[in-house]
Image (cartoon, rainbow, N blue to C red; front, side, top):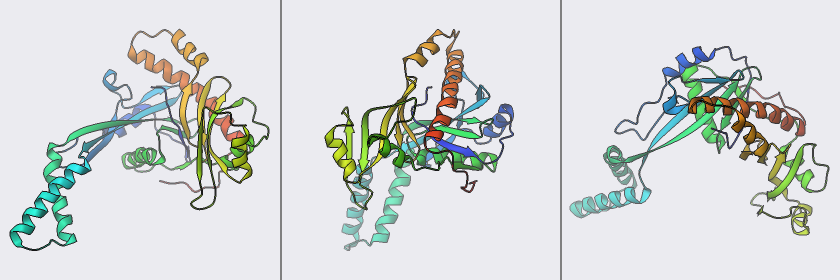
Length: 307
């Protein structure tokens, strides 16, 4: 249940639904298995999985939700093979080469024919709403996946005005300064991984892992004008992560002091363990996220709301 990536969004209006009211709304767009000829299905499930029926779960006034996406798995090579066989048969029968439009139509026919027989694969996206902080936190590896969840929330609720969290200072400028020798913010420690990118169009990219980032080799890239776009850090010996230029958090890992505290909490079953971990995780993030915003010069609140 512990989040591994963070995409951060600011709610631009007070979220007024109670967890119970939100649950009732989510039921309307709950997950349904993929139909025979549908390429995918997307909907809400209980964050507790088989251990729960409620589509919302609450701890520390934070409301967790979970979206499930089921996709049909059709390898491109299989599609190409079926299309090629059908095209060849038609061309031999009619004694002519098929046009591009005809080939496209044949491909669509093949897809419709194969979809009912395809295997399915499911993925899950967790997020929690923090109404008292006006924030949405999504555990997603990409903004696209986070936006899928937000889009489904909008379709479910009719409106869900949020904007990506932005700061007054570009994270890349701050991270580059840290690695160039400027004072690192209190409570942050630079680790051993980074990504450097030349800001020029088609510029080079350097990725370093398990290296001394203050070594001459790395510093020479910075002096040549490359910017830090990702940087591994630790915060207060409580969590480690990779800070990114777009303010997303990658490879989030809660460290021993937090995990030990989680183990010390008594839990009678999996649901109780989930609840305890969720409460502890959101408590840590409620301290970490504001610290991160401060490091990057405070929040930029001039952006327009979406949804």
